[in-house]
Length: 227
Image 1: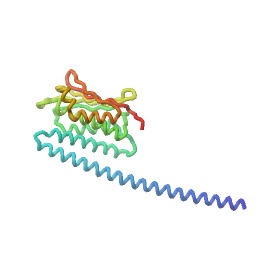
Image 2: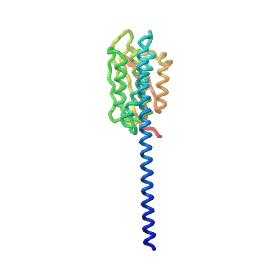
Image 3: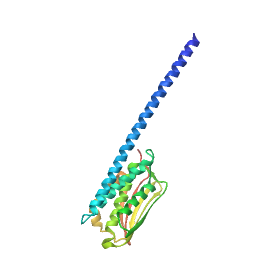
Image 4: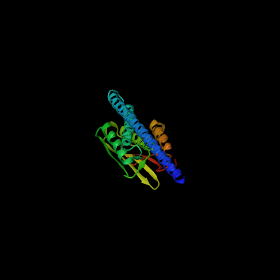
């Protein structure tokens, strides 16, 4: 009798395992389908953002003062590059050296060759995509402002950017060798308020410094934050 009960229990156990395996396979299939739909949606959003940025850039050429449109287009391209980075791996953090390089290429194409520069980031810095987006927007804002205002009347110059690790913190600097800035105007500018808001999201601070020749924007924030 005990043998019969044992065999029955074993059969029931195997059947239950088979049921669980079937349920697990079904859940995995649903997750794969959801991920495919998510990727397709993100792909469409990226394409729409790219098209909008291109349209804004084209329209800006018809304006007497295209600076606002150019800045808007650069912000959109920042979002596009973030989507491109996410396409590499949905679950991975964003490699900041690759992300900032892509933004620097978009910046280079948006402005003429009279302003040159280099963007450098430590290779081993990875951030969650929401934090990476904040850093990218500060970078875009700082670089775009420098390229628009630091070199008036067609002057040539350089804009250098760097993201590096200092202890348990990260520091993004954007420096130009242009004409400097008026602290009173900077304090009232929308760009300053935007960068300060982004810095707060990163639990950090942004600083504006005058250099012997040019200006420096410095973003300081912790590499890791409690979730």
